[in-house]
Amino acid sequence: MPEQIITRNIDAPGLATLDGYRRSGGYQALEKALKEYQPDDIVEIVKSGLRGGRGGAGFPTGLKWSFLAKNDKQRYLCCNSDESEPGTFKDRMLMEKNPHQLVEGVLLTCYACRIGTAFIYVRGELGHAARQVERAVADAYAAGYIGTNILGSDFSADIIVHRGAGAYICGEESALMESLEGRRGYPRLKPPFPAAIGLYGGPTVINNCETLSTVPAIVLNGADWYASFGTEKSKGTRVFCLSGHVKRPGNYELPLGTPLRALIYEYGGGILGDKQIKAIIPGGSSTPMLKPDKLDTPLDFESIAAAGSMLGAAGVIVMDEDTCIVAVVARMVEFYRDESCGKCTPCREGTFWLVQLLERLEHGHGKMSDVDLLLDISDNIGGKAFCPLGDAAITPVTSAVRLFREEFEYHARYGRCMVGAGADVARQAALSGV
Amino acid sequence: MISEQAKQRMRDIAARYPAARSAVMPSLYIAQEEEGYITPAALQAVAEALNMTMDDVESVATFYTMYYQRPPGQKVIKVCNSISCYLRNCDTLVEHLEQRLGIRRGETTPDGKYTLMTVECLASCGTAPVMQVNNEFVENLTAEKLDALIDQWDKGT
Image (cartoon, rainbow over the protein chains, first blue to last red):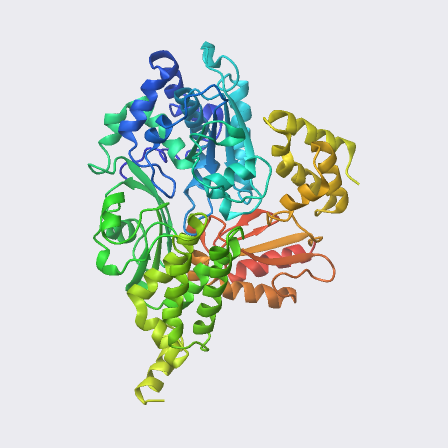
């Protein structure tokens, strides 16, 4: 990999320990910040360096910080490490292999936003990651990086590691706050946004794990240096999670704007069995599919949006030519059905009915009218659900029907797949008019 | 019964948070460690430690999938069946496990040794297909790898 910022030395032995992290330049950004910068300086540096956050929504980080309500209530920071989007596995790696980098990012953000208590909400299933972060926090306390009067300054902060217990919805920021406060992970009505009224009623910053892991490098080397990577509008690097039918799946930290083709063929080694690509999901299962005609699209926020999808959480899922799109969509919507929290009717009922229809089509009991019925149900979820999970759930359906409608109709007409195992039999039957 | 030591751990954790009920999730984990799953005694201990009602605690315990409502087997096998693992043939592996263990997904073997579950994306798509055994990852799965593991477990190691 050419430009590595937050995954630099990621496989170096001992990086996860305090000494190892310090050997690779760790906690220098914190020392520099406390000596040379006022909190507002840090906000400005991050604002001009990190234009889009590294969570699913890509909201500008520094701007989010500057929205914090100015009142006398206790402020909080929550790191969203509830990584659960199908196709993403970067935060897990960052926590397991370089937990101190995240801790330093959390501390810098606390300093910038004048926050005294931070939480790191780690997805429950990621036990090893949580243990690594817990150990890093304990060691950083012992070394005086966390606690009162950090490094002899008047800055004090506490960090609490909180483990989730299995609920995708808790990656949604308001559900995450409910969960942290000790309740079922139901999303809250917005507004008020967390920056106004968040955790325990106080103004709250919620940032993704990768975003916070990026902060130390930006503070240490400056916004201009960070902005020299990436494109004019999408600055810096991104950890792309490459999975599916590629020869070398894995995490690749690359400058934003790297072409999709380069990620898949140069870094990912191409497609298993040297097959053709049928579809690519560029940002995790909640983002629309693309066809291979978009392979030369640069992987940045604007270009992927112009191509008809979203960079999302940068989970790039690649499907080869033998993939049945109906089966894939059924599998993805089953995820949202299982993970719908049940609070609002459009999402709870809608995802259930989408799965019923998709399974019926997949198993050869569907009707031609089911294809439009899928779109009709999607229309009754999209924009009508309480939180973004509903919109996410319909994305695989609407994008797949738009791009691969013939496969859905083929399933309805012949009761089998157009591609893959069994397709040849079906094609013969179709040709002979059966 | 939940030990006094465990209840003290719950109270200690609660003291770290701005509000005591924030400790309900870590406390449920502590109770589950002792009981094996979320028993009425577990709910009661958490409720007492955090000054909540048992119903309130139960409403949290039943929302999150990692709190078991029934006693699980000694080895809880969770196979990811989301999109990236699906593309890498996880379904075949689940069927293989069902045959090998003689149970269907969601079931526990009569001797209480194994529970087989399918779960949603485990954030390990780069090493798909994957599973967790008692919450620890086993990655880049193959049928051979599964057989070797089960042989080892059957021998009691």
